[in-house]
Amino acid sequence: GIQVEQSPPDLILQEGANSTLRCNFSDSVNNLQWFHQNPWGQLINLFYIPSGTKQNGRLSATTVATERYSLLYISSSQTTDSGVYFCAVEPGYSTLTFGKGTMLLVSP
Amino acid sequence: EAQVTQNPRYLITVTGKKLTVTCSQNMNHEYMSWYRQDPGLGLRQIYYSMNVEVTDKGDVPEGYKVSRKEKRNFPLILESPSPNQTSLYFCASNPNRPGTGWASGANVLTFGAGSRLTVL
Image (cartoon, rainbow over all chains, first blue to last red; front, side, top):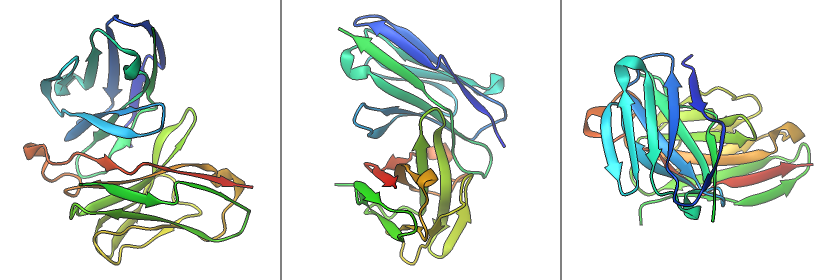
């Protein structure tokens, strides 16, 4: 099946710093989503982005489908950004496969 | 409010005692799925359902059963729970089956709040 690798596995930031999270995948995909899991375990969709660039406030994401990677940018990080960020991809007519996540800790 | 509701949220049980985790969505979604989350392993799919009476195995189906008798409900059944099924479980739903609706951006997965299960 498709392989999904996220990097870095862990990240510690000072509040106000910027960061880039990466998701590499091993096959072409029809669907790519980024999720944030907050410290209480809730999983929230951030972006649906099989290709191109999207922005939502301090967050933006870019997927370069031809090169099989996606990037999630967090600018001016806040403590509420802490949690785990997951990338999930859907190859062809198969179901979503998740990466193992990047755990982000933003300290005040 | 559009949501996926799963119950119970927390459960401690003993080996071999059958249990069911319920999942219900009110968005008329076709596709529903169950995931388990374990430290260092991310989310792994247990079972999924493309529509009523259509279910299929995910990556880690052993020890689990599901049913989809109605569009809104997708219960997860552990017939004889074992300690290795101690985990955080998530139910999720999607407007369309995988591979469809992607052009409209409609295939955004919505998760329930999670069910933390401990099997002693």
